[in-house]
Length: 608
Ligand code: M6R
Image 1 (cartoon, protein in one colour):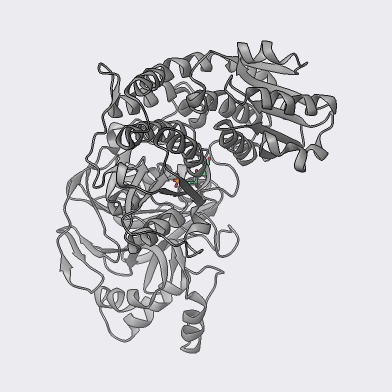
Image 2 (spheres, protein in one colour):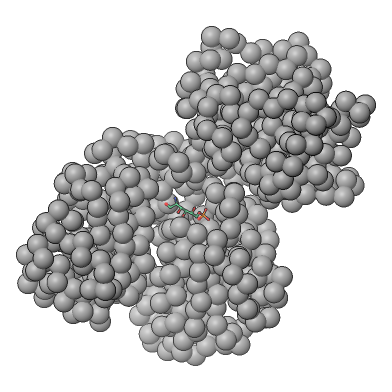
């Protein structure tokens, strides 16, 4: 999604702005731009494509302004051209924007009738003209922004720079995140703390509806009603995280390899390793034994983590789980029982649909527990209870370590609920906890299959379609495998419950169709063997991910077997995610794709 940076500096700020924008690259973008005041006059440099293009543009035509705003744009309204790139400007101001202005058409008509001329296809340009119209009525910049903001509908974050105003930036937040940073004689605006980490670790997050006036003297916050409000400063941990690729070619590779460590760290937060029991690091505002059911909502990979957790909550706590993708859940008017529990799962904590599901659940009287990776995110702040994943910043657009950390947290919650409902015996809990404690080591072991996954990926890169199959908790992992492959390699892939094969997808099977079967040695393994036989009988090429026992028991001629260590099969998705991710990663690398920033995708999806 789009990234916003603003710097009210002491020297030329264009370089700082571009540096900060680089730290927002992980969010995904397709054009970028900077505006500064050159001797009081608004001056812009914009470029299609990567930030490198913008840097070259600035090198050719340097900027010296000491105040400026910058933006990475992920196109929503209009193509990713230079003309549509932000900042958008009038003769009075420049603005950068993240999100969507829903009523931009009607505002554009109104402003066109008043003589404003629009040059782009974007919704953002309407904001520039709306505030300009207020300035033309004789208002000062602050009053003009205050008058314009209530007229905008949608979810957005904005940063404004005004012609002739060397000591002023204005930011606004409605649904999309925005933070203020405090430096040494400098002030900053940024979409997140990561962007501002090179400059400061002292930040304030705007609340929804807030807008802020930045001058060298400090920040003055206003709430949605326009009244000045106090917003607390906090120390950001963002600078503690090294945002580089280490020895890896891509962030995705680094993040896959970090999993034993971050999953271990996450589990240690939820488990009492010496007692062999789950110890939640927070108090629950309900007793799980009083719950009638659990509702889960999330998007993409986070949704698949929830789908795995459904099996765990139902198996260990005997609690029925209703789960839906957030974009459906938020609109289908699901009847919810007051006092029930809603679990939302999100890496970024800013996903618009997931946030809307959370708000719907709260309006209906549910307690919301969020499993999030960004502790300062909107979803975290609006939840009743936050169950953090300790994955650290995930930069690659393809979610990897956040997924396995989400699974780890959800597994611990399911065991804790199982104990509370009485459905899980102390003995079984202890067994399962010791299986979880073994997971990071097993992930490290799984990483050793890398040469084989790389070799298989070489063959997969020639496939047109790939089918992923699994049963039980391996079914959501099959869906996740297909998502991972298609989002970074652009090969069409589908995940299916293995038992559904004969109800349709078997028609696709031939010798050109690789079929990746995820089959730990679990109680449904025999059933999966039957499905693999159906595939083999039709000439399908099977790549099996399973432990050695499973391989011996099946007597099928596989194209390849990724042999995993024996483990508690219920938790296999956490460990088996490693080869699944590596298959996708190496296939995309082999095909020369942009692994960390695949086309059309954004890291943090703050629009619906
Ligand atoms: O930040 P979130 O976890 O809420 O994001 C949800 C999805 O957008 C995300 O998982 C997406 O599907 C990833 N690109 C998958 O790799």
